[in-house]
Image (tube, rainbow, N blue to C red):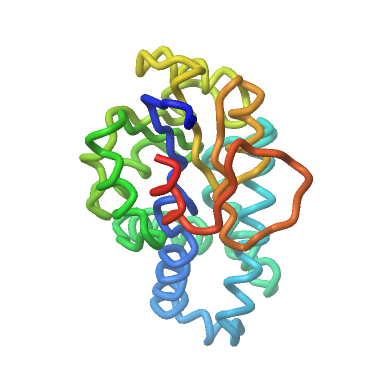
Length: 232
């Protein structure tokens, strides 16, 4: 017999909201508007790869409390420019501001995200738990047309914690009136979403579209959000 859940908690970036496509579009726009090719950055694909590497490393430092939010926001572009020997701090700050204006209004969702939310909306209370910045995440939900599905948006800022720390999951239960037994976390980040929820006593769905190998044992593992229709 399937366990009866009452509360579904979704991660946003890479799970429902297609961060890769939306970020790529935003960076392509900046690449063109700031004429980076004329500054010696001839290959956008390489630029995009370098940016993502710096972004991932800085987010890891941010989650561990080693850097502040503002430092994360501008340094990922600054470090990418430095890779091309462009030591222009003012340009990095300007591009960072433009990135944060353009990115949240992009609308691409991951495949089957809307269908899953439509399927679940009348059966469950649906919420977001995100490490993203609260105002930015609200804009993403609004512009992608899915904000109405969610009862609560639990962010790292609002909870004064961050996945995978147990405090953010405890905050989420208090904010929604849920319990560990009737809640499940759905996310793409094994270390952050899945193990964090497991350590807090929740069931989890690991959304693993790239079929990354691992040794963990999440409650469920899927490669397409469409598979959630058979779980819920």
